[in-house]
Length: 411
Ligand SMILES: [Zn+2]
Image (tube, rainbow, N blue to C red; front, side, top):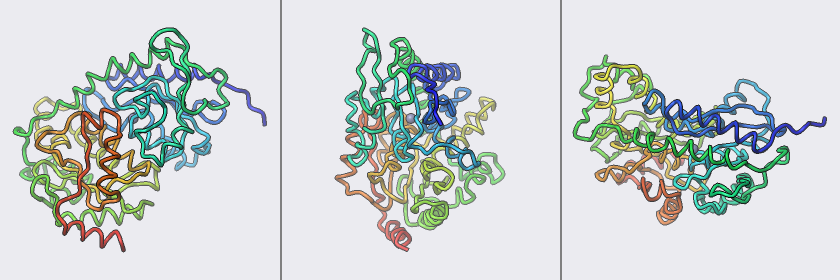
């Protein structure tokens, strides 16, 4: 059966730009994207949903990440969709580390309009993908496309990366459209990043373990995770008491098609808030960290959206930003695409410097890379992750916790 070509690169990028403008009107990052099948038909288009009603709704709700979860959700409902290698994501802005890891883990192609010098995977413009673990660079070079931008201004560029797929009629981006993609993002990023720094300082936080059991905050936590607030350690010092919770989540992760991936979130008082597994059987990118950071952000959003200022203040007091607490990964980072996605999603959760009193916010129990390899991985990440957030996962200090989990990981 012969198919007629249906779309230009320029027309596809214009759709992404229109989505980015919708994102700006919502007050979130001005980024949009769409998904095309192997003939250039639009399957779906979305924009960033990180911010809603002036509140953090979901730090992982970037356009590309949402498109990938949409794809898997449609497949799960029985929709007939082409394989990821036949699908192209068109995005108004260079994918961040989270979205890049998700795209590579799932195996989609991507076509990129504007650069992102801070968080983009091609932040240096060389299309050599040095920010990725070496094992992933070839795949990225073969699937990430940066079409030429025609024009005479600073937006002009020659094509790099993979060639745009053959179904595109025209293969270039017009200068005004490229400029629009850049300008819409630039017009939003400062205000959105400021919202990530809106949380209360440590001195004003209160211990949720002191709340009555029927309080909406406690009930919200227990609904997400029935064991919430049943374990407590010294702040920032996860101990062996966390082992049963992580072990149970690791087991659940295996039942959901994972390799024993589990992540706990402790608050600044040392309370266990959440401990979740991944759901890879539902979507190839629903890792334990994605589930955990999303669940926590959406709980805060649900309790605050539309609430009185007093109520919003109370939620902020008892449920501080995760940067005040500790994420504990059962399995440390490795050089896979999913692990890179997690590092990126961690960056998207923080979106700014970690508090100086909490440099070990990201801890892991079982190492999967040598410390030197992990150091190298973090040092290669784009400037936002490397210089601003300074992502540097560290092994938990408690040896007993490590030995309790390694027994579990081996079984
Ligand atoms: Zn992203």
